[in-house]
Length: 229
Image (cartoon, rainbow, N blue to C red; front, side, top):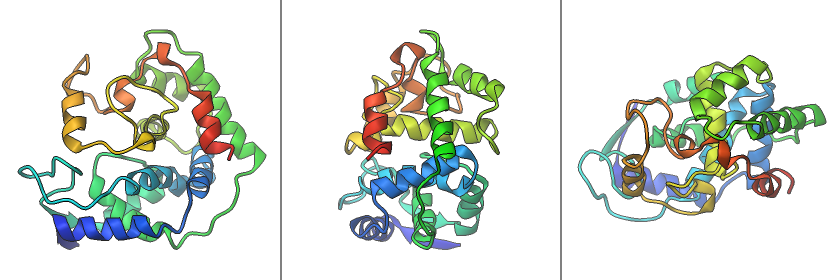
């Protein structure tokens, strides 16, 4: 375990983001393989790539967590736990500090383009999402995807991570918070947007995915922009 103060951790993340070993294109390739189940580790890489692009120099603001970036005042980096979760196929945008050990590992991974069969799994997933009823919630969508059995090596929380990444890309739109793909947002904006959510505040689904409803559909132009470059 490594303990890092906010400023030191932020500087490390900024440095990683300034010299990324992967492009948006290669991060998207990893995600496609992750969705297909052939490389579960790939599911978190696109999310981490988007997060790394947003870190900018600033001083800590807030109490326990920074209102600008969301990093804790002091962080205990548990690299083994973060990597174990990533290799199991989880993708989360909630424990922001885990981007550090995950991306340090990511730079050691080889890249390869997804196969046609792997690409098709993501396209099939988007077709299922596009077939949502107008009032379908993210939780209801996840259950429908589970029933379709198209996502191999996933459980409820791994499917949440896949959908959350699509939401952070803006492929699953929402009206409450800007997705990471579209530009910077502060952690305070993220917290404030959660106050506008309808439904239980104890939901295990957070923004931006939590702000999606079936009538918002799928942004296929954004999908092509990211995955067909």
